[in-house]
Image (cartoon, rainbow, N blue to C red):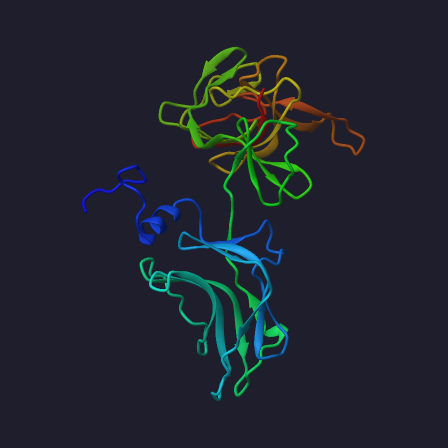
Length: 337
């Protein structure tokens, strides 16, 4: 058929294939468990001719499976001369109209799972290693291979009292949280994966640029209220010598908070290699929340061990004559208002 939609009064879900196709969109195949440490449908070996499967629930190819009691699954004896690697699976069969736990033999490596959505579809529970000539599997020769499924993210409001189910995702407003079994912990908030802008430079209240052909770029990433920022300048002309400290604009729409002065590292190197320096830059909220307001470096008042260290503002002409070919980089992060 060209088109199909259901379920409607005159167009019900009439076949198991239609149900499987629809239900596969509700959740991923796997075991229902809050944590891999839980024993739902876990397989264990005890050195006998069977392995044991614990009670649990699962989805397999859109079909629901329940085992409500401990179940023993027979091992296929290994009559060969080499070690064999087998797999315990949950097998959904369209022709058998069932989901069952089954023991599937392999060879020197684990058997390939069947993935025919319209026939036999399997998901793994455990990998069993059977020694040559053996008909038993010990505990150490069983490796957990269970797939797990989840409930998806849930909506919530602060303080609603819902238990913090381990591994459960929760959305509160614009924040994503995850449960750790005891409390809800912040995981992420909406932001900008990567943004770019052209920084505006100024000194003493006067805007300037580093040359019409200069590389002057800012790159930033936003996570919640935190902004990671990198500014890179490749100078192509010598700017005028301004008496005020060098300032540079922050990304548009992301002003810094007035609660603290966030710090950055700046690095300067000349094209000739004669001058190079590092220092600290900072947001300076008393003057502006939209700029990095100070680029500072430390210098002493003399040349003795007792000379006093003072922080000076970097200017366009002090202590370096910034000129063509020089590189100035600012890198760090800050908090928004």
